[in-house]
Length: 369
Image (cartoon, rainbow, N blue to C red; front, side, top):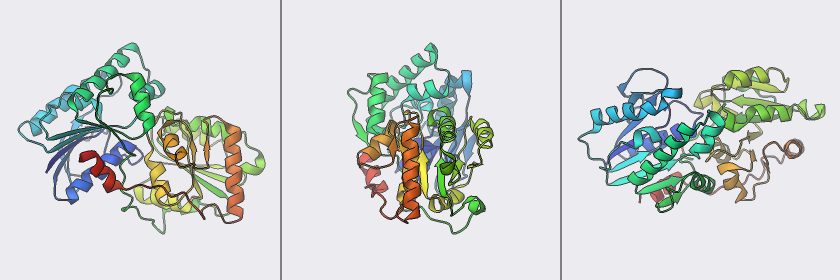
């Protein structure tokens, strides 16, 4: 089969859910022998055109505008699509980013679009959402729905939130499935340069998040700073991630003796940290469709502390997972961390992890059937 995917950011961004999911989907089809191409915005300014940085599939970069000029990405994607794919008949076109998608003609046997999160709410938290941007987002919603045979939402929360932002999805064929990450390819390295950051006598809490406003890391650190000294001296927070708030979060982290800011790490080191830490924490301002780090932690049996709003809470609450709290409820957060400290002391923190029913291949087949 010939398959085209559009991505929302650089394929190398391991801290972003959408690029990770696109990478997994592309590898899944290419390993089956399918001809797979991925259209990627070039935020790193490494040039444009075909770039085979992955052995299993073809990556085609197009120049990416940021800020005020972002709407121009529609036209750059349109140009590269027609340059490389004008005469290609695809079996599947799978979209993951809005800008290039609206001008791609419906020439495939199957058209799929994955909505990774509520655009309007995410834009409101992470960017200055003015009247023009609201109109632009509503325009994208309508164009995407018009061209698609299947709309894939990563959570019930995302569907509900997007339905508030637009009526475009009312008559669409909708499939709800968590973010597509292959649970069978994860491995646990026995060593890492970050081994020195782990203190086995403390409660090691990994925070693998995008360092942007909607994940609420700055507010999380502020809440943790109010904890009793007896708690703070027994925890070790390790912050991993990248984003436009990276420098600000790093500066804030340096003020607290119980925080280690690690910044961007490679996937091998991230896998090590998942295994080495006692618990993962996923703060969020209720604006995320899902979190790739959530599944990665659960696959390893690492307990997860999470905020109940958004797609992560929607998913874990359905399994009556015990470590959920409301964003900015620092009393509940403190009580959960105290619970984890006590469970670690008696050796029962990781003894009975919640089993989450998830099958990557089954979910993909559900969407494309």
